[in-house]
Amino acid sequence: MRMMCILVMFVLGSLAGAQDQDRLAKRYGFDANLSFYPQKTPKETLLSIGKAIENNRMDYLLAHLADPKFVDETVADYKNSIRQGEEKAKVFLAFDRLVNETTQYFLEDPTLVKELRRFALEAEWEGNDSQAVGTLKEVQGRKVFLRKYEDRWFLENRQQ
Image (cartoon, rainbow, N blue to C red; front, side, top):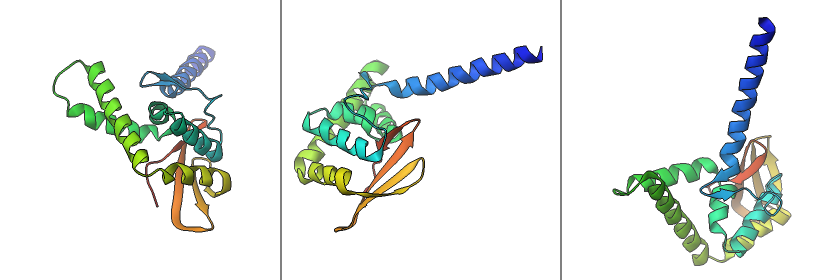
């Protein structure tokens, strides 16, 4: 009986872990493409962000490279402002609004992409297993913040 309980707890624990990984595997209709946009390290993640922007894949950036908590909260806020339609349509429209706003943000200041790439190539990193802060010696007062969920790094939406 005790062995059966242990077996059941192991199976339930495995299912919970698989559900967490599934939560990040497909977001907003986009499958994670970790071979084309790797996220094993903060540097890889920043290079992937630059690649996504250069390839006009702001949708992928928001679905898989930006902080999932921030994206989900923003999409939920935008969705709540949409009065009509089915739930899936509201989520689609809210995500599309965030994609458009983020695209506009990068279009208004093209140096941001260059700066992100520079951080990816030259940054000195501080942090721990779940958070990283990148700085450049020559650029005072600017930092890049990343957070790790499961085994992937994501860009946080805070600037300094």
